Amino acid sequence: MYRILKADMLASNIYRMDVEAPRVAKRALPGQFVIVKVDEYSERIPLTICDYDSEKGIVTIVFQPVGASTLRMTKLKTGDGFMDFVGPLGRPSDLTLENPEELKKKKIVFVGGGVGTAPVYPQLKWLHEHGVEADAIIGARNKDLIILEKEMSEVSNLYLTTDDGSYIRKGMGTDVLRDLVQNQGKKYDLCIAIGPMIMMKFVCLLTKELGIPTVVSMNPIMVDGTGMCGACRLVVGDEVKFACVDGPEFDGHKVDFDLAMKRMQMYRTEEGRKKLEYEEGDTHHGGCGLCGGEK
Image (cartoon, rainbow, N blue to C red; front, top):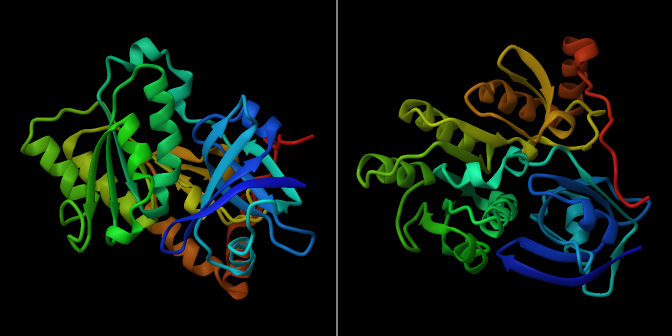
């Protein structure tokens, strides 16, 4: 049993939990995820790691209920626990593999949307701890859905925006990025976008226009988390990739977002899943090979 040390609500229908998982916390890096399971009857849920403390053995997860199992998770409270808490899975952010001294020479901007703010935070925190300054643009539909504002402001130059203008400014994250580059003279060597698929698509269209290399995190399309279900199959350039075992980060300018979003819609029905499996044959599944976690 992996004990929940703290459970609270960050915003409307967005929940945060600190979980006691020493081995996961010891090995975790920004960009990776865990698979949680409440009990033997629940589904396996992949969730991006929002934060971790290797000394205290704590891993923080943030989630939004979308199905029966995540809805059950909202009922858990401090002192309850998960039957399974497996990780860290996936490949860590490429930033963690670079020399911090070289990163200090780069101008980096993050664009996060909705719950996608959660996986942005550990990357910004890692950069901040290594003396690297970065900008972060965080957007939400309205003020009530802004999360981690205080935490993000402590580790980045934070720009907030809301679709309805209820907080700070009105507009999309892309509007802020365009303004920073075209009107405020900002120059960026790298953009990292994490959030809903449609948001990442339009960020990439803009950054391609602006000539900014862009990395996207495709964790929104993960279902099983091991590559066995085929849900996170996508085309990057001319190659078939799987977000959970090959990613979740990819070159955003090479991702076929339209195909990925179409697959997401089809995958929601049993008939659609069978059709995709038939059409894609041996490339429908990605296989496993990166499983770690509490062993």
